Image (cartoon, rainbow, N blue to C red; front, side, top):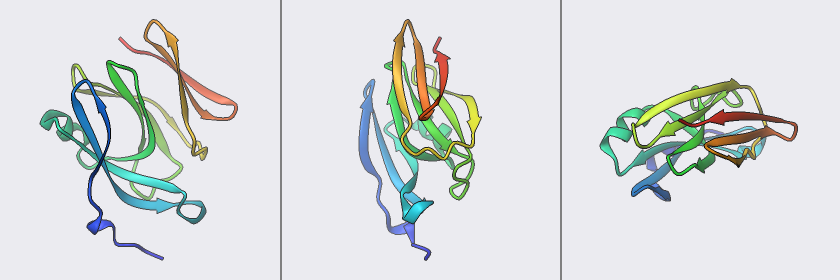
Length: 131
């Protein structure tokens, strides 16, 4: 069954460093639509240019200086995704690692001194050091 997502509205879901993040549902897939795929817009025009035409999962973790997200290649490309980091000071996107993890509930841990561990499955994590 195909749904028409054009009528979906952007809804606020986070605020980091004075930037409001909104997301809009673009697709649902996998096990009875359990995986939600969103487009994101913000209160920053520069950041919106970076996010335009890109699709994201529900995983969103703020590190203070930026945010980690799960970015899909296309809105139909689940489970093929990238773990990315968006530096909110310089408005730059860093692709950390491409993954085919079908695990839905990604988690994040602050290891201190700008280092983070992102759990992409029950037994796999990715460590990343922010600048």
